Amino acid sequence: MEKTREEHVMISYQHKDKVIAAEIANRLKSAGIKVWIDSDNMSSEIDIVDAMARAIEGAFAVCVLYSQAYKDSENTKREAKYAYQMKKPILFLRAQLNYKPDGWLGFMIGTQLYIDFSGKYPFEQKFEELLQSLKNLQSSKNKSPEPAVVTPPPQPAPPPPQPAPRSRSPSPDYRGPVGQVKRFVGHIRSGRF
Image (cartoon, rainbow, N blue to C red; front, side, top):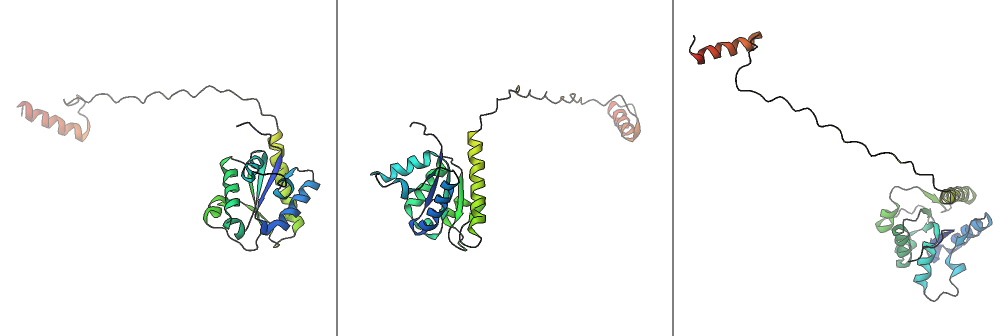
């Protein structure tokens, strides 16, 4: 598979949420972000699945505009899972007020933060949050890689010292109460008592 250039953000949404998806797409375009959204890019496509795959592959980020309708759609499920499989940065945008995802979508979102476009907060405030997140992702993709710093591999630690072999014969040092007992037992065994 040939590597496509990652230059746009792809908006994945369910058509029930097309008004908010179009608003976000238009505002991003006005802010200078290249956007791929199916309503602008699918008019002449015959193979929809292939077009969606190329859109995800060519994205520097995927915005998942989620709701119950998004979760229930097999098409959007495939889009989100493919973006995840491709290790694309995914920004989750909540479209439905008070919606708490479960199942595959809840698993995918997990504990990640989301941007709430459900109407609970002013659109402008949340749009600025999204725009800043995308600009941060875009700039991190465009940075030239830092030169690699080569460090030698760590040397293995020396083995711990081995304890001296213990002898079965009593130690010649008979100081202290233990030594006295050993000396007494030694005398009994030797018959010198």
